Image (cartoon, rainbow, N blue to C red; front, side):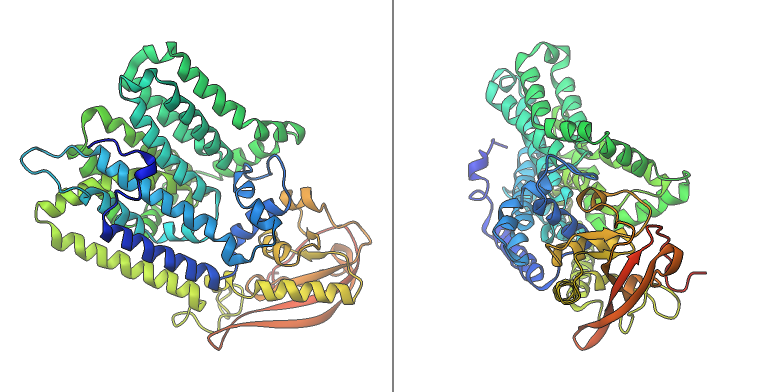
Length: 508
């Protein structure tokens, strides 16, 4: 397949595939405009509201990327244009990778655009990847840089390109940007090294341009090192503990694999067939971009810590191979099975995205509680009602002379911190996180506006492990399509003891 310059990527995509991409962008835009920010989205939006060299739990690019919009006071729908454009760019690069990598037998060549179209389709039918296209997470950035690194590495595997400076400079820039996106970019860097060493052998180590690329990448990630040096290397300590998890159990790995199959879909498994039968041997090492992160994260999942979206870059790396495999399978007459899976995954995507929009209806209704047997939790309530709650918190704080807001669990802090800006948010639990860097602990003797959310409700903290007194100021219900999702309670709390001991409602 001839090399298609990046500038002409979109123009070379067939009309039907462009139509699919356009429809998906409209879908993402509509959902993004209708939903509030999720826990993680709000956290990373706060990065942009507090510009810094790096942050406690992630490198800074996810904040830097949306800083201009946040500085201009852009609404939520405008912030979500960033992940939508990143998702679109990822799909276009994956399309071209599938077209470039395919080497079908001369007796049965694929029509132009078939492998690429199937590669785009497997991305479009992976439910979790739509979440990355609606909300900006570090993984949204890393999946694009993973695809671009595969593209550039494929260029540099050519014996003539390896002596040209421009591809190496591009490689260094991409590696640096990937490192500014997420710490797991180290897997992509190892994949680049593995592919190029397999292609060029020890001669690669004598290539001055390769060392220049490494120097560029290291220079770009210096802000992360600088910030960590100034803050006692807390990011690396946190990530090491977070990745290790608890005691290793095979059952955790099995659960991880089942969840991966559900949230990304079985169509991506055709990547094996595409890699084995549709890609030249000289290019098969590119599968390292998927195998390395997936294998490591699968092993780490035994400790119970791997989250489903962590493997998104790996699945995006498999997508070009899956596109080739599916195009060949259709050509060989396996249409019935494949289109059954296409229909099943499309239905699952529609259900998941529809439940996000409706707040879980019609399958989850009247569940305003926090996960106990009497009031089961509603996972789709997360993205509804926080904007109104934040506005109400600002009003109540001003009326009662309170200069901050507080929550009793760190997962509640990001949405309140975003929607109640510029009020600082304190987390009343004994753990260290980014909010301690931004606002610090609530000082002993201080007053604050305490917010409680029914989907994760806590007892009002009073006495030796709480406040001298708390007065209920208001209750705000959240409804979707006429059905209750959750409720917020706002308390004016005075004279904090400085001794946190949060207790969930219903706990002993």
